[in-house]
Structure formats: C-alpha cells, structure tokens
Length: 217
Image (cartoon, rainbow, N blue to C red; front, side, top):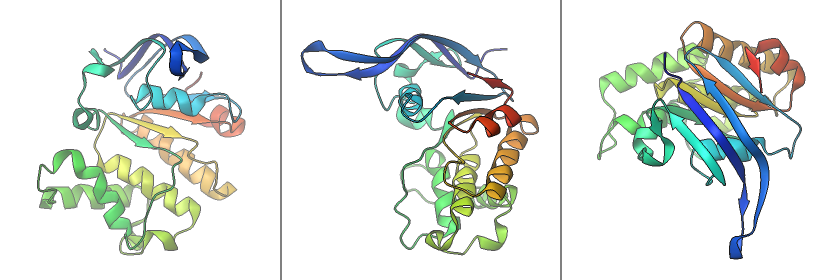
C-alpha cells in the first residue's frame, strides 16, 4: 500500500537573499498511510507550522522531497493538491456575513469548475460534513457568532467536505476549552479510524497528542 504522504530527507527553514538560509529541521523521513493519525509534537516556535507549510508547498523546502502518493509535490497543480489533502490552519478567517453552510461549502471549490456553482451532490456532501461534526442545528448561523470550539468544528467540516484522503491540521485545539478539545480530538480520531482518512496534526498539547495519536513524531 502506497503512503498518502511521504517525505524523504526533508530540510525545512528559511532562505534569505544572497543565498543565506536558516534550517529548522534536517533529514526528516516518514510515511503516512490511510487511516493513520500522526502528530507532530513540539513547543511553540519549534517550526511545526513551517514544516506543515513546506509539506503543502506554501513554503519552499531547503532540501529533500515531498510526495503525495507517488507524485512529487512540485508536480501537483494547486487544484489537484486540493483533491489530495485538506488543510485546517491557525490563520483567522474573514468570516463576515458567512454562515456555517457558506464556510463548509468552500470545501467543494476543487470540484465546482469555473462557475463555482454548487450541484445537488455538492449540497448533500456539505450537509453530511456538517452533520458529521454535529453542527446541523447551526448550519444557517453566522460563523462569527460561534464559540472558538464550534468554529474549529466548522473548519474541520469544511475539510471533510473537500473529500480528500488526507487532512493536515495546525494546532486544532490551541484556542478551545477543555470539553471542546476532547470533542475535537475524538472527532479527528473517528475520521481517521472509522472513515480511513489520514490525519497529520501539529500541536504543542502533550496530553492530546499522547492520548489520541497513533504515532508521535
């Protein structure tokens, strides 16, 4: 079975003018398979977000290779990559006047074509994703009226609606209360073990990482 994500000899960091660079990680190697929940654990400032952004092509690697399936990252068009992995980052969303349904619907972008119009099938996928995170009662509510924990569940629903075999998350429980943290982590575990989605999560939360992950890295 081929891994969903494979990295070989990866070196991450920052490249400056005149060829100078600062390395954060060197010679990283791992495979992530279907239904596996892997956590990148480390303190704030350790370069976890930089690693994830490198894996997604948002930031160029200083060395090594990243593969999605058997395809090198640099050979995958942006829209095709969006069919291979969904992303939940810590960046704040400009959610003015958007409902829960609107937010989750953006996960269908890779499939809507030039017009961006949603089909009946897209609508069904969106509603199923919202139901999976138990937010159906909030589907018409404005996103900015939600709690932090509810917002994070909506962002995970958007990733689910994207229908990718892999979801990458950066600090998904960093700004939520304890009950929401458990709820979100149990949701991710369900997506991984019951729905076969590969999960790669970066966090500084030792308790959550040890309790829910298949493997720490």
